Amino acid sequence: MKILHTSDWHLGHLLYNYERTEEQYDFLHQLADIVSAEQPDVMVVSGDVFHYSSPSATAQRMYTDGLLAIHQACPSMEMVITAGNHDSASKLEIDRNLWSHFQVHVIGKPEGKQLQKHLIYIKEKGYVIAVPHIYPQNFPLLDEDTPREERCQRFFQSLLDEVSRQNTDQLPVILMAHLALTGSDSTGHDEPIGGMDYTSISALGDGYDYLALGHIHCPQTIQDEQHCARYSGTPLPVSFDEQYLHSVTMVEVERHNDTPQIRVLPIHNPKPLVVFPKAPKPFDEVLNELQTLDANQPSYLQVNVLVKDFLAPDCKERISAILKDKACRFCHIKMNWERNEETSSSVHLSLQEMKQTSPLDIAKLFYQEKYGNEMDDELYTLLHEVITHQP
Ligand SMILES: [Mn+2]
Image (cartoon, rainbow, N blue to C red; front, side):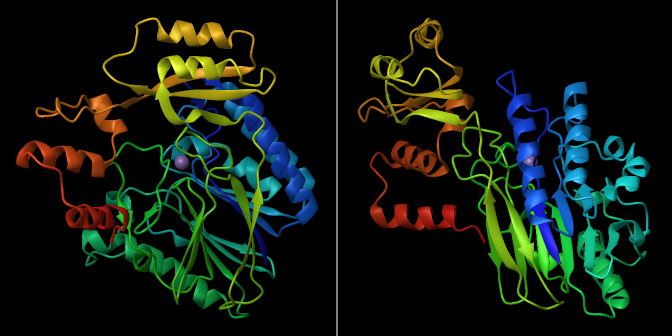
């Protein structure tokens, strides 16, 4: 079975109030071209189809046009679309009966104990188990004795067991989910810090060959002896923190229990999200360098400034004036605070500064304030390890 795995389209996303219709349409066309060239058996979209739970008319039209073009690029291909935390599960399901005529299966939310809703048989090729984003308290109660904290695990394993009963020909099994896996790299994630629940890979059960994940935007494969999982990541960046290659994933598995073959297919972004300059510099230097930007390259710009005390109130106007005749769009100024050792005896971070400071730097500031000297190397290394290697 050949599976095209993608997720987190975030159609209709506004970047600092700029509509992104053009590049999102461009992505959908690239996807249709990939489908036409590769002729997959199934395409899975693991949640966050739309950015807003009430998508604009433009975004909904883009979705319909895009899916139809993809369908026409390979009419025999099935599509499975699940709701992410950004989507309204019930709105996504409004036209699921209509989409079923185009071999598009839309799964927004679980329906009580009906496991069959999530099981999609791809004729003579394999099975897709489609699980949308489900808040921990909303997992179906399959039997009265299951404690609340085990509902998620019980639900996933029941789906896998049901497929295992049906799968007498040992065909490949694909599981879809929209959640944050423990140990995954959430660089550039669009959720506020602390707003994510993590699920361990073992809680999603055993018996699938490939776990097609959505939710985390940084593409990555997570593998151990029993499991092969992957986040395909955003095809287009949703925030300036997503400074990595964007792509969709092609997966091939012949038989159940075979190791999946994974290929990464890059998506070209006609309007990249540029952090300028790469390393922060004082405002006047940045202004000078902005003049050298290519006038004809469309892009979105985050201006990276090193701030000593404060920024002049007219700084945005001055940036806009320089960029007036250029194709790039100014989004915002990222302020990086230059710390003065002598005056840092009483540190006060605003919420904005807190959001822009790494946990390690906050720990360093805290230590400095509490003990009056800098954190020693050993403690620094230990903290660094704890922060970067989450359990
Ligand atoms: Mn997302």
